Image (cartoon, rainbow, N blue to C red; front, side):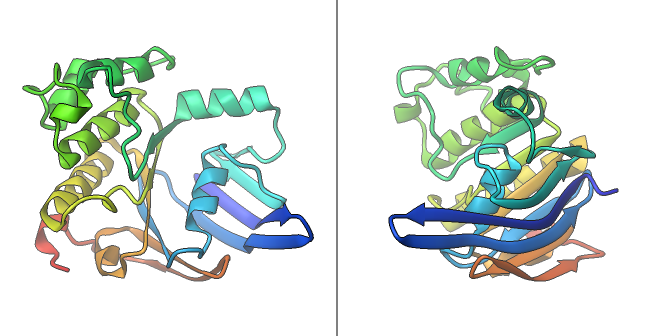
Length: 233
């Protein structure tokens, strides 16, 4: 059994008389400790898949399993526990609290977790040892994204979900962020899933899941993933 399993997963949104099928009978699996990419253009269903996997949205049909547990048919309380204790989220636009310092933004996440890491140590690991007491407005975009990653990592999750984490960054900074995520996966054994529209970064992943119009049309494995620093796009 794989760490993550999507079996026949569908998601429909009803808007008046119109039904939008964001995911249509999707099947894929991801092994624990893998760095996986979900790749597709805007509207392909990537974010819907990520939200369902993270327990932020529910499937209309099918089954989603994480570490053998079905998360599609559990109570809202169980979903909250799942999100709190097993999942870290990294968003495209950081979602930091502006009137809290970098350290305080990370500390908030640790207060919600059962086995958190020390915020100071995690910020040091992401290269922000000298920026802990700065507010988000005093940080660059790349630094804010590193605070966002530190906040997610400080929860000590088994699963890190990243929604276009480099979409708001320039090329050089985006490459640094991808390198940080790849290193986190390799050094900690955490399962990292990144959704992106950038097909050029596919060589860095262990597994690439390609989506189009709400469907999975291809899944491939990289036996020898490239280091982010060796890749140009």
